[in-house]
Length: 70
Image 1 (cartoon, rainbow, N blue to C red):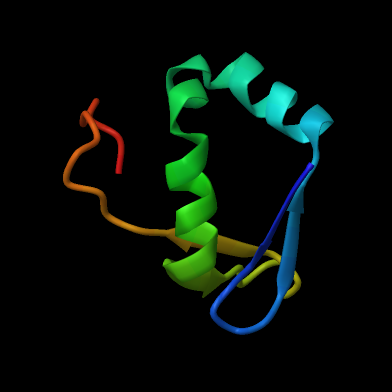
Image 2: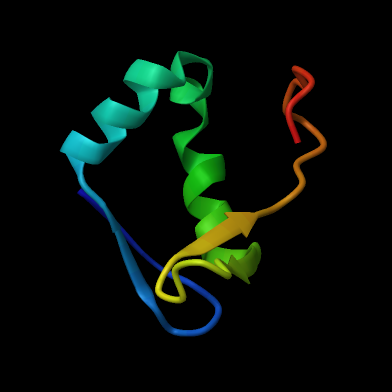
């Protein structure tokens, strides 16, 4: 399990089970766990309009390959 605190002081947990689920469907990000955790730590956060308790984190990285996704 990984635990990261975002810029707003929220503790975000990524369990081994959730990580396995994510990479099962998005195998191309398997080598980028450090970047994903950094995104949660210092990236931008956007609250879902439909589910107020749900947030999406984003951050640009210059050294990552771009496959047409944003």
